Image 1 (cartoon, rainbow, N blue to C red):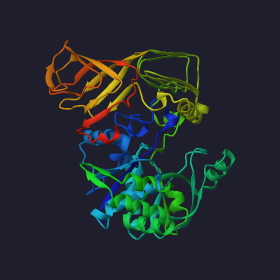
Image 2: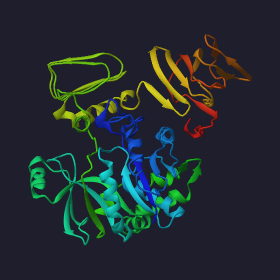
Image 3: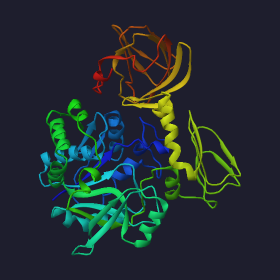
Image 4: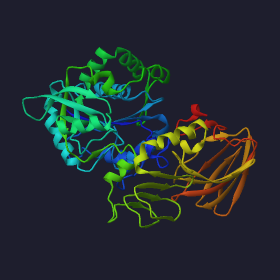
Length: 474
């Protein structure tokens, strides 16, 4: 049986705000190394010979970012399945299993969230190899992390009887996140593991179990895949069928009900980096216990997590704190309150503030744009267009635009005219005029865009042609 990584990239990571945001979430960030968490996950099983190409499941909003990060690794995804709306992990896994079975009826899956850290991936590879015979015989294997202490932020798995080879155990019980007293009892007992949310199983076995325990999920996913379509590296499920699918987790939908659950313990330096305090635990620290990123001056400060992205950050006489500076927001919190960062994100969402959704620099398949200034009836952006890339042919009902080229060469479509602009040249795009910006050169194109009008929202875009298939989004 061939082994395929299935990488689930659906979380928002709101507890790691302001670095992690809805449109650029935790899996896409380089939080521990030079590679992003998604990229680290994609490389985790590279030591296994004859490994199949990975299947990714992600939010449609993130499709180009995921694809670009996979390409940066020199990898070819089997496909990237796009969820039009999050429905938790059980439907996401069912989509991946249906896709794999259609290509390889005997496919074996290693199911991994894209936002976890493993500092000793070789230990995980060993555990996968040891667990494969159990999965091959029909078991649904989950990996239980040997606890490093009484952690209240994780669910637990209680092991049952030892199976024949001594590597795996039956699952006696799944336990919700406990209070501190219960967590201490679990660690002392020695037969409880942290629930990693990582699984190994045959794709057809998962489909049989989800059909047995949650036929409503299975039926909705069947329809979504049958009525979906392949679009280059992307598989677009039928939007309405998937939106009608009930949401549920892998654990609740199947693992807590099936008699085929098996747990294999791992000690691989695992963390779900679910909060800043957890990230502090897995990052290299200086002699004072501080994790420092960027231009930071720390004086008489200990055991802190300090990030400066755009300016000098100075901190004096503060211990056990989190300070994260970005272009448009600064977080200051005590490490003991790291879980409560999510409450700030909830308040931002209730106030309909952009800081919960996007960074000042917003990524698009053609490049990125960054807000520089804004006021009544105007805003200024810096556009960066990748070589060979182009924006959609579009128009705006409520705004006009001025473009000034500051680096590279721009090819501009404005109405019936197509012409090139070079550095220090500019043009005007009237309101209601069809237009397009392209980069025909070999270096990034940088343009300053000045928008003026009565409404400047990003939803004032009507697309007529688009190489990235985004016409339906406008």
